[in-house]
Amino acid sequence: MSNGALENAARTIRNARCCFAFTGAGISVESGIPPFRGHQGIWSKYDPAKFEMNYFRRHPKESWELLIEIFYSRQVACRPNKAHMALAELEAAGRLVAVVTQNIDGLHQQAGNTNVLEYHGSTSRMQCMKCRRKFPTPIVRLDTLPPKCPDCGGVLKPDIVFFSEGVPDDVHRDATTLARQADAVIVVGTTGEIQPAGRIPWIAHHNGATVIEINTRESAYTYRATDIYLEGRAGRMLPMLAEAVLQTG
Ligand SMILES: [Zn+2]
Image (cartoon, rainbow, N blue to C red; front, top):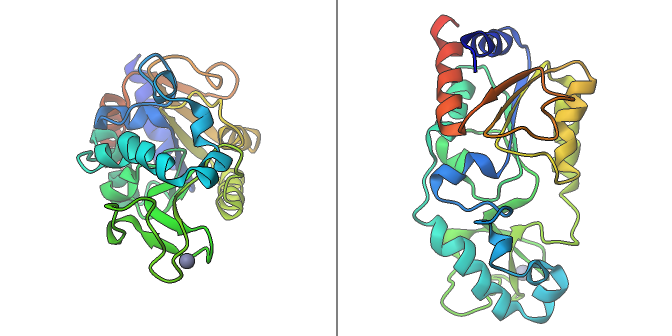
């Protein structure tokens, strides 16, 4: 990568009226959260059919045991990394209006970003299957499974989007509106293959936004939507970019 590309990206962000980030699993890998795909990914070890809503309804206990093994036991120890912190710095400096994420780990909020649109929900909340109320995960006891709603006794599910479930309407609407208004988007750690979330950078691109991409390898966006491609790990590239933006900003 040339210094020119980094400077160009920094200048784009400095000059933008509305810049947001679009993130995927690649930003959280350095926090110790495994991606879903790839040979080290979650789907190489677990059967995706067990993440269907129907499976959860029929086997809530087994489903919860699996969810705890994959997500909850690990995430207690996971912390935001330098890439998350860089996005929080950009927001604090008024250079980033929102983060649209496909991740369910809550690390953007932990880093300090306040406007996070979660396309696939978050393990930091649970939702009652019966009364639909939501609760922060830490107040729910996981010693007997499945956990039950403190209000009505219904089964609680993590507030994440299972296969065969739609993405949250309000998140999709807000992210689409944002993508139409933005004049810059920073795509980080995602191949853009999961729909409808993966369309967000395309919507920004078609509405004239400059697309800055940070990935370890080329993606579906690179030659077709991306204007400035910065190849490398998110934990290395994003802090460099944030520094370049804030130095002369
Ligand atoms: Zn309930």
